[in-house]
Amino acid sequence: MWATPANKWSLNINPNYLISRRLVIGANYGGSGVVADQDQSINAVPLSTHFTTNPRFLNLGIYYMLGPTYEPFTNIPKTGLPGD
Image (cartoon, rainbow, N blue to C red; front, side, top):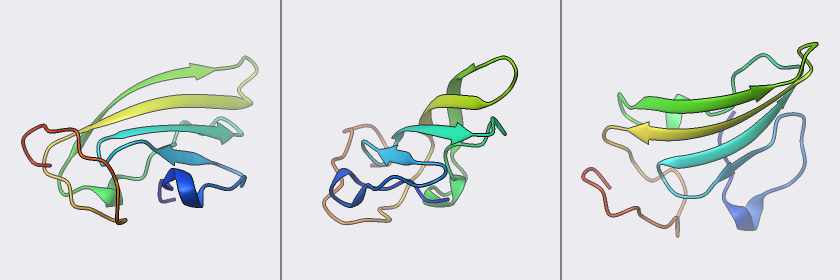
């Protein structure tokens, strides 16, 4: 699933919120643990932190993509880091 910029964000089963080309927050109902889609980057490695309920129902994640990225959407703010 692609992360979605704020002006196009809508509720869906697994909403992701693209803050910049590198920073993604999202929720995964069902707790599969997959929130951010690496297709928005080129060989980037996600740093992530998770909160998962017990039993495993809801997974909240924050992802920061390390490595070169491209711009899947227009008007996405850049972080100013190398590769942006």
